[in-house]
Structures are given as C-alpha cells and as structure tokens.
Length: 265
Image (tube, rainbow, N blue to C red; front, side):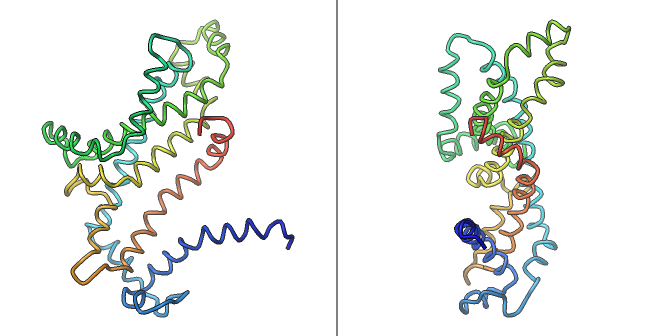
C-alpha cells in the first residue's frame, strides 16, 4: 500500500468509528453496554429492533418525521425556485436588502420562534400536524434554498431566457423544460440541505407536536426512566435515524459535488 493512502484511510476509519460503535451497541443489552468495554457484542440480541418495529409509538415516530420532512422539502423548494429566479434575473428596489433579510432568518436560533409558532398554530388549529412542523422549518429552509439556487441560476446566461422567448416559449414551459434541467444540480443540493436540517431539528418539531405528529427524535426520549437509559434501544433507534439521511445522500451525491464546485454551498 502506498504511503499516500494511509492518511485518508485512517481519517475515514476515524469518521466511521462512531457509526460502528452505535451499530455494535444496538445489538447489545443495556447491561452489557454498562458492564464494560467490548468491540463486539458478547451476546447478540435483536430485541432492541424488535421493540421499534412492533411498538406503534416507535415506528409511527419514524413515519411522522419522514412525512413532515418530505413536506417541508417540497414546500421549501417550490417557494425558493421563483424567489431565486427573481433575485438572479431582475433588479428591483431593495433587492439586496431583502436578500440579506432572508438570510437573517436562517441565522436566528430556532428557540426564538418556538413560542410564537406554538401560540399561532394552537390558535388556528394546526398544532400537532405535519403541516405545522413543515411550515416552521420552511422559515429556515426557504432562505437557505433561495441562497443556494440563486448562485446556480446566476451561472446560467440570461441569453438562454431571451432565446427561449424568441422561439415562442411561454415562461412556465421555458422554466420547466429548459431552465430547470440546467440547474438540477442546484435543486438537488438545496433539497439535500432542506431535508437534513428538517430531519435533525428537534426543538420546533417537539414543541409543535404532541401525539399525532410526534417525531422520532422526541420518541427517543422515552428511553429515559428512573432506572436510567435503555442504551441498547436508544442505539438501535439512532441507527435507524441514519438510514433516511444516507439514502438522500446516495441519490444527490453527484449534485452535492457540483454544488460545492459551482454553487453557493
């Protein structure tokens, strides 16, 4: 093995170590985890996964999370696309100030908006619904998506728009058939970041739900009791929360690389 490969391999192993440890813990009992250090489970058990797949509270937590995260991603991209196009193609009074103001929403911590959202959604009957969490997360994801997409759209020559109009294309036809395919890498990158932020965010998701839309991150707090934490069950739940993110990364892996090279990522 050449020496130049040693450092990357060691670095990758270092990054993968926590994931391996989590997977190994998920096949252990809590007693074995607390008893001492071991690289491999001494007694393999699937009870932790069995609890998750048979207890409605657990598997509905995953369904709820995937539902509002997907809804948020769709809403954020749908709103960000026309907004980013306007910022990239037109100049209007206060455009730079408005663009900066959008980013300030992304800079604010989620805790600032938890109570206002809670009172607002309780008043209009949206509390404990997928839409409540999706719209709350859109406050942070739409500015991020606009920022990313505007960078990609600015890289597309304006002559493409003019040529399409001369050829008789309507704006919707031009946008979806010609313009959108040219920025599909940017759409993939923006969707990835929207999905990941909404998937890992806990405070708003927990504050705005109670029973019917309760996310898996909130369900994982059930592992705490007077006797301590059910560490094996918590590890199994953690392993399963990695899978949706890994699937999304797999589908947009090529777009992410282009995003770092071309866009505002």
